[in-house]
Amino acid sequence: MMQFSVYVRHMPTLHQAQALIKQIGPQTPPQGKCAFILITDKQYALTQNFYGPSQRHEKTPKQYEQLILFEDF
Image (cartoon, rainbow, N blue to C red):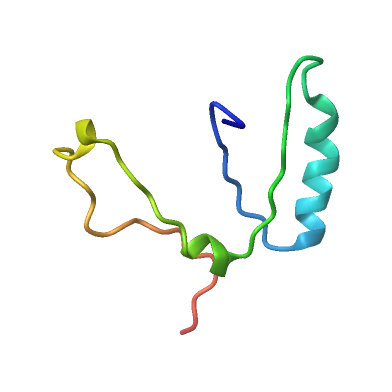
């Protein structure tokens, strides 16, 4: 196990992602560990989620709400 929690943040450009890493990285606690993994939107779309037996009865949303930043009209 590498972590107990994972945080995801979308960054529109590599330059913006690198700037955020420069800002957040130095704030890692002395005994902490922080890893930044940069992936493309296409790679993120291939994410597969697995749930244990206790979550089988939970309702899975049929459609996900998405934030639309740019839309062609």
